[in-house]
Image (cartoon, rainbow, N blue to C red):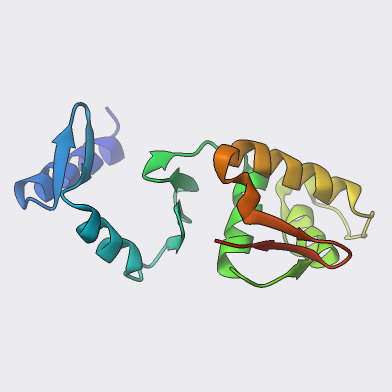
Length: 148
């Protein structure tokens, strides 16, 4: 077991000893919905939280309702950009310039190539979000926004 995985398990056990989380089968959960909501409202360095989503920026991990959400690097970058600007419409060109073109596979001199690359990325993100896909809202002719 890797050192970070061992440390993670030790931290979970410490929280369980403090009765802040409880073991449910092979998983841990908050001891109450009220406490979960309280924890989710706290500002934490490295974490982005919006609605049912929690992103760890350092570890590039995403959770949806406390369950792992497997996202590609592009999907993670898009969701985090939306979460940082929750409720704000972001133009297609801004999303393409600030998110899509900054990914390693797109490293070249920036040139806006139209909306197709972005539409494809948004479609992939929505597919990954499953039942929560409708939180990514298209404002026709303007851009997209995260609406929770």
